[in-house]
Image 1 (tube, rainbow, N blue to C red):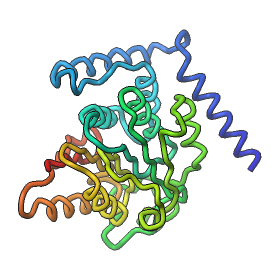
Image 2 (image 1 turned 135 degrees about the vertical axis):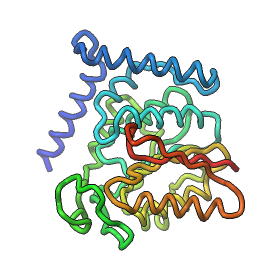
Image 3 (image 1 turned 180 degrees about the vertical axis):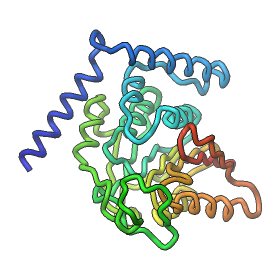
Image 4 (image 1 turned 90 degrees about the vertical axis):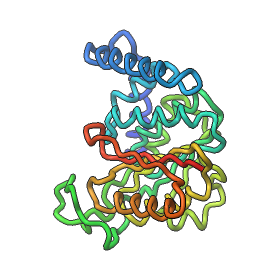
Length: 273
């Protein structure tokens, strides 16, 4: 345990140094920075000032070191947060892993609102897959869907380190620890209203449960991004497709946009009413 605490402290120090270092920035980062800033300007010109992406140096460094989420997908998250800026409700991430995307989201809402960030994770790895989860992309070369049970676990301290490194205030976030099917019944700190959610639970049952949870806590204009749509397991795509079909049966309550896979594998759900 002492070794783990020392390792986390090193991560915090390293992150702080990386985020605040300017004179040692390599050329490749300058190129990335130039491209990202150009993209942000084009986005702002096309959407107007109310939904603009506010320039921020920390964002660029967080984007450059993301794990698992490419910058192209991350910009959909950034855009969605800008679009939801004036919508009532808090911000959620379901499945936080090492907390890299958590830090990105936290940095965005720190810039422009007083919204609370709710982070959900078991910190025990993936739950057992259901019969609706069939292995599509064997990303760890394990051979079967069942062998992913308990894999991809991360320490809560890693997430705390990421948030501390960007000086995100502790009263601005809540960590909900445990598998969601239990948290939803046992945690009295759940958000009452949600304006944006990033869902990265990988499997059918937790994703479907989260979508049903969010349906009751979102209003028109709220955005939900579901990661791993048509990737890794068949479950995420099935959960999203079923949810959209069920809720658009009588009238279209949700718009569902699936970008070209070159941007990543995810679906963007926008609530219409």
